Length: 181
Image (cartoon, rainbow, N blue to C red; front, side):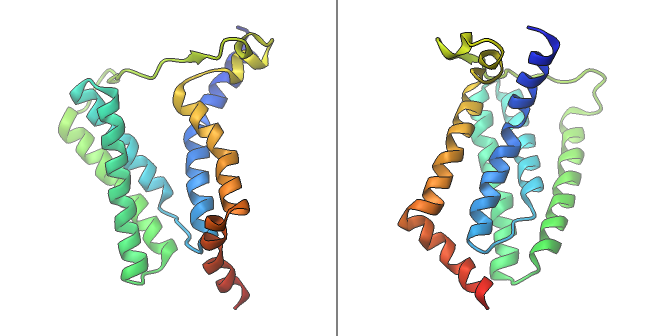
């Protein structure tokens, strides 16, 4: 694998969390909610997932803990912006800063200051049998892990749900009403 192919493969892989965050934000924006706490939600999820996977040695438990931590911070954001009627941008920024400090502090409480990076198991790459043999594109797109494949399959699914189904119309209608006012 040459340097360009390797670079593009890693870029495709590393864009997965950004695409997931963008999908979540698109859904939220279409409903009229501006979730500026996405960075904090992802950070606490990554922290919780790493801690859970490292301590338990089980990557799937790490995924569950990451989801729980992310949902907890998202619920905190929803509580403050929807029920307490606080400003969405201010609360999102405050939550991102709070989570950043929380993660740094508790990482050091749990592990101390490490001289070597801690490591956890990662998901293995799965090559799609025929497609991974396509020159150049095969190595970039069709030799990724399961989460990357699921993420890029979700993009057209979310588009279809938002713009072609009655559920999507129901989700979009509050925001459309707000925009027309």
